[in-house]
Length: 226
Ligand code: DC
Image (tube, rainbow, N blue to C red; front, side, top):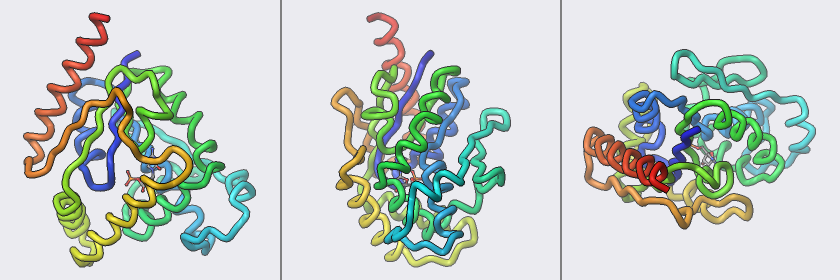
């Protein structure tokens, strides 16, 4: 099976690019961030804030997070309910980052993520795909861009969805979330030693897309020749 791991900080365009790249290559797309968001939503619905003063394992024992595919598109189900749209808010972004620092939450999602890559060619994005989830991935890419570019992209995305947000809040949240994701003890966001860096600062979407196609094709060929 071919597996492409794409990791990087918030707002680097991972989800949008990955979805389109998976479709281009005919691979399934697995957005692992959506799975952490679904867990974050569960805690939020229980009235728990990002401090997570609660019995995490007890809540997880009564939680299911499933991924289902409609065509090549991933939908995320929390306790049987499709929450794919509801998880895309700034509040749930922060909750996802908070729950993702907790070892029981990571253990809870790891097997599901690995199993998805076992049976199909797949493109999986997240923070620890190349380092922890799929250490033997065929191609590993670390996708990044300047914090300003990433915050502006995320700001535009939220505005297009009709959410009322300030650019400065989006920027501050993003910097805080990056810090949390890079400094947690377990599976922190970092570039895998064998990952190729793709910096999309100043690039339009189509340029980033073309760059990634080239990197993935090269990576798959290099793997075939080994
Ligand atoms: O990619 P995203 O913004 O949807 O991810 C939401 C949060 O989930 C992010 O702040 C960190 C966490 N996450 C993670 O810890 N590991 C992953 N593989 C994917 C996401």
